[in-house]
Image 1: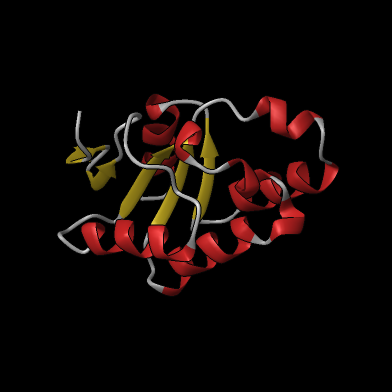
Image 2 (image 1 turned 120 degrees about the vertical axis):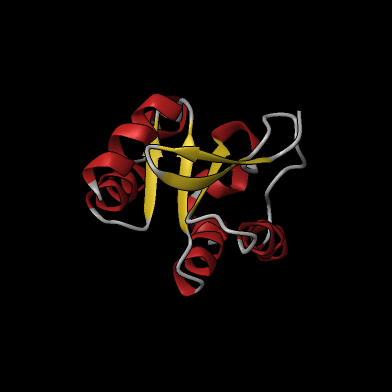
Length: 122
């Protein structure tokens, strides 16, 4: 399955395929943002596509990737189970909680939860 631009909860969302290339660098984030410029407001990335370094905050990978989305005003939704990462990092738990309280970066368990967030943010 390829990445697809679809309407979800009345918004255009670039839903990234689970079997796509890993997202590990700012360049990878910029590639997704470039695809999103075809009309997406949100990029939904499966958590499993994110490089393991994304979840180790000391590497700064998460910050670099997330900042690119904020700079280009494209929402990023990390979709999937990140609980194993949260169990081992209080800092990551805080980042996820803070992100989910805002409007640009969300961590959601599935696309249905993303739809709920999108409807609430309308």
